[in-house]
Amino acid sequence: MAKQSLSIIIPNYNGARTIGTCLEAVIASRDDACEIVVVDDCSHDGSISVIEKYPCKLIRLPKHSGASASRNAGAFGSTGDVLFFIDNDCIVTDDTILRIRKDLSELPPDIVVGGTYTTVPYDAGFFSSFQSAFINYFETKNRNDPDYLATHALVIRAEAFKKLRGFNEDFLPILEDVEFSHRLARNGFRLSMDPDLQVRHIFHYSLVRSLRNAVKKTRYWTEYSLANRDLFADSGTASKEIKVNGVTWLVTVTLVLLYLTIGQRSLLPLLPLLWVANMFVNRHLYRAFLKAGGAWFAVMAGSYYSFIYPAAVWAGFFRGMYQYLRKPFNHG
Image (cartoon, rainbow, N blue to C red; front, top):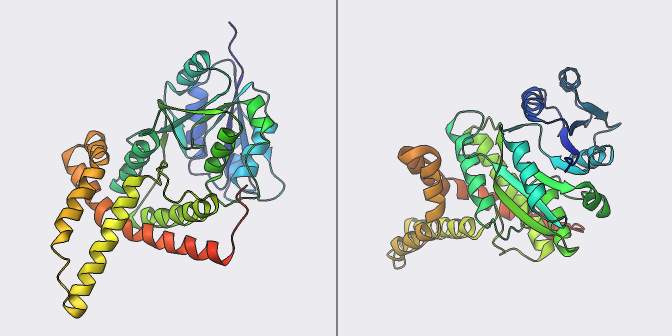
């Protein structure tokens, strides 16, 4: 049986630092039935000069339009039977294309396949390592029934993509893949997570960038979840573990402040029980940290996740709630 033609769609906006490395990996691992389509969203950092060094189809948008419009332009401007979406800061592994071919040969046409990040990122550093292991765990924990598939590794047949008219371009700046996944499910398509379909992400995260990312993601998750009426859903990087961890942190901070300000200590004995329960709920995440980086990394990542990260999550939550109450958006 002949291979299905595969179009690899890569949106780019000011990705000069990473797009070359991304394209080198794709070119090295592609087969003879692949085309590479890069969509540049009016970059002003020299991206074009980098992209033009590689054998790929370059589509240049006339004005800055966002990730959804870039992906749609790439998909509708491609020729493949199957579309594979990745980001300009993602590096395919040696067997990424082979995994796609395997999934396509085994799964029926109504299934859309998603992948995830490797547990170890492309760039070294604690906060990048935390983020990669964190996302890998949460995106794969419900692998048999994922709520969404992320666009950093998404495989869909072109006919299905075009039937749904692609990503919603009149949407939030991020989470377009979540909205698209939910729309796929409503239209009778099935979502399948292949945990072995992986890309290595370039984060370059510091403490500040990690916390800013948490604020941003939580803000827009909150807006979308309120509009979608699924705020308490166990969904990927908005999973129940993160919510339990956040509530545990907030209750702890509240009780400690009550003790320090008015001397209220009657509820303080409940905190050890609360934290034991939180650790039990998050035990698989801690195990994922251990598997990804060893004992010391697990201790550091678990501490960061439990005691610092929730502050950013709550900041994003309250900002998202305020924005939604102030001006609800059309979530599709």
